[in-house]
Image 1 (cartoon, rainbow, N blue to C red):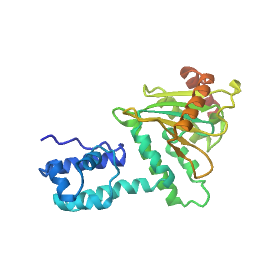
Image 2 (image 1 turned 90 degrees about the horizontal axis):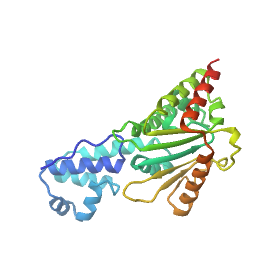
Image 3 (image 1 turned 120 degrees about the vertical axis):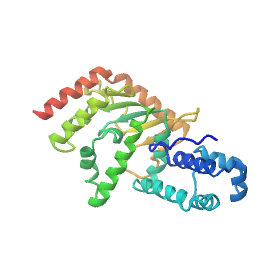
Image 4 (image 1 turned 120 degrees about the horizontal axis):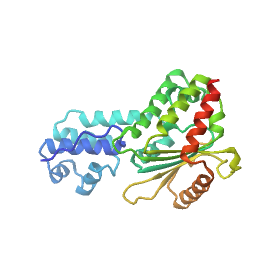
Length: 278
């Protein structure tokens, strides 16, 4: 009997639950057929759950706990995973799954440093100014944002292709000290083999991306790409429409053509950081 390894804490909720479900089933000596008969589920449905291709329900977790004599192990796991997701806006939660499973992420950001690359202080400066937000909510949102960054620390992280508008380097989000810390972080991650960081300079006179930022997630197993579209509204934030994602991919390529090289971009960030500190 081969028991799967402990789940990657930065994998999606579905994947983490699926790994634990299979581990407990094997440790209890249950075949898929035997467990399915006990909880009245088809083998194909159980396979999808164990492979992370189907979202689990609390009712199902409770049934498996009872049949395998686990107490509340799977229910508690699902509750814990869901509490983490609850710190994020409801419309954003589907994107969290795509982001965690993506093989690569293509980002265009015209206004601020993307959340996956923000320092804690930079994130606090942004999130604390949300109208009506409490200190406790701010800290919860910061923790959720930093938790998302865990995908970059995986043994096989997704490839990040990031393009920042030059204005991001000059916009005073917070104090010079906070900005300096953020730029130092960008310079550090910009040397990573899994992160390509480029800057679109003012001199390019590019207007293609001025309407807003977006991210394209390239999914594994030949699944179609998915897009996250930034806006002031709360609708159409996550899009799986092939025509829309294709259009954004075309815009990304147009923006990237005018961006500085990776080396030139890091040099610009370094020079900008010097100006902030003097």
